[in-house]
Length: 107
Image (cartoon, rainbow, N blue to C red; front, side, top):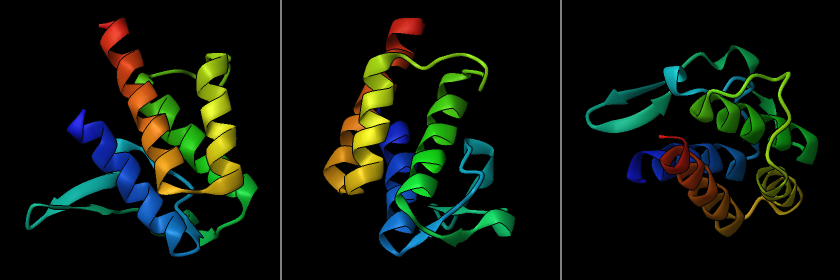
């Protein structure tokens, strides 16, 4: 759970600073002096609700290995929508917990 929460928290920090990553997948995170850092900032831009939604959906799909052609579970989609509108750390934590639960169920 800690790894999932950590990467979602890392994305929240970026969003809280008014930016979106554009490609927030686990392969684009490195550890530097035991701190996770985003790499591949080619698509970074100013945040908007729509772009935050895209960011968290990309991260969710990447962690769960769900193709863009497959519909997300309605509960996940609702959490993504809620986060995109409010962008609170609490909403991001709820999404991270749901993603983790999906991982546990699928394994």
